[in-house]
Length: 143
Length: 358
Figure 1 (cartoon, one colour):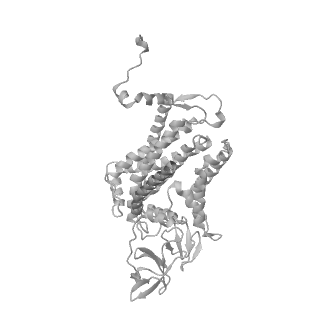
Figure 2 (spheres, rainbow over the protein chains, first blue to last red):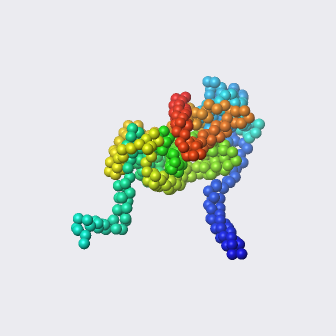
Figure 3 (tube, each protein chain N blue to C red):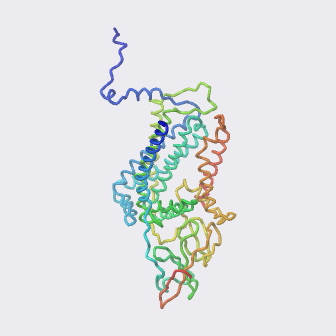
């Protein structure tokens, strides 16, 4: 009987201790994790004037808080792709000499359609829709 | 009646209150084995000395540094161009960080090749591995603080690697970045880790490590076991030699800091492409180059994931060295440890050189 009581008291004290310590740690752990801050949904951005890029050149433009690679393939043809490398998150660049997209971090290559040509990137780059409205280049989410 | 010559000396005022005589007794009994590899014993102390330099120069940099994306780069620029000797203090801080990690690596490999990790010093090894991991975390967090292009992309890559860890990865990456992407919240966090969290944990672990070294004494190589080994008193003989080594390290730091000031680079622009020639600090070059070589897919798995799991397993394997380098009866498997040490050293140095040049 005494053993049983002793064991019960042990469990109660131990349980109380664990619960109280958990109640101290839980708020600290929750505090450490950053809150979800919803971003304003951006579906369309004006990248700039048509003249900002000459044919066969590319530039990084802002799409909300994401970088997008805008490439002018010819006088009339444009391409917009996510500029975030699918390997380890670096920002890619367009190479005018080879007409390929290159990630300097781990030497990944994509073609102008965003398809992986060589190197470690596991997936193609996401594509955005591009159209010319007057003398402005407009990028829209999704193709 | 005791004669005057045999009387116990009366403790001094401080002795009586601080118990200095017991500390003196411990130091007097401490000895360092003398053999052909004794010189490797100095690197633990050199690492400690460089850590102290890091703390001191870090405190000085704190007087001017501001951890926000709009001010971090400019504040470091201000330190380097306007504050008297600011360029030197920052340069010494950066050089000292690199030399500290180099010294810690030398210390670790000397422990492996002299088999000093063996029973009963397993916990000393584990705490040392923990300290090396903390030193690398110091390097990773401190690298971002100037908020320049290289450090920005290095942090993007580093935190994305953390995101690839199965199950916990996305939470870990969010915790490190302070949000979805590397930005102002990441800089503030890394600053907090670098100047408060890591120094606190490192100090505690270092006390444990030094306490264990004190508790078990300095190990002799197993080939000398059972033979009479000459000993050098720790104080003052070894201590004075160690001081000379520290002084040499300080001279090297001053020379490197003055002749090769640490560059600041360009301010980070989250909307700029990663520049050509981007690479991390030298001690992350081997995994960096390995990830470069891995194809996009290995069988059905992404190459990056395979690489990360491989690095994780390698780290666990290496950290648990004292456990597999002895058999069930506690007998040393010296060749296994030496072989693994040579292989790791060969991989790390070859891939670091290739990562630097390619």
